[in-house]
Image (cartoon, rainbow, N blue to C red; front, side, top):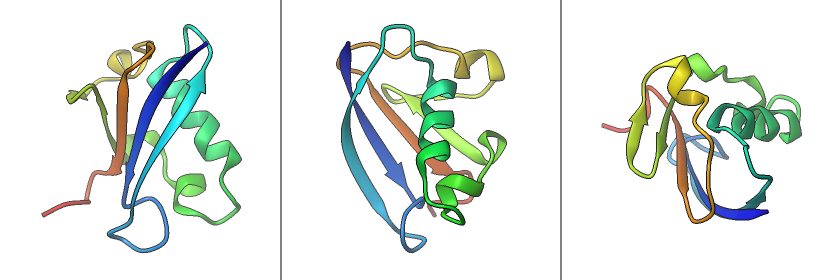
Length: 90
């Protein structure tokens, strides 16, 4: 099992929310599977429970994941994964 750093922008309470977490993940967990687990565990009606991956920008160690195939990238011990709505930022 490895530990990753997860950064969430604009997915909590308020549009400018920021959250940083350290999570333990199973070997072979992908960026997509990680998001699916997060959205499944989110409270009903929360942004994380309602936003689809197509509406997200995901980064793996600072590199944007632009295609569905890239969302299939496995996360490894020490990686940083960032999720934010595509309309977040300025």
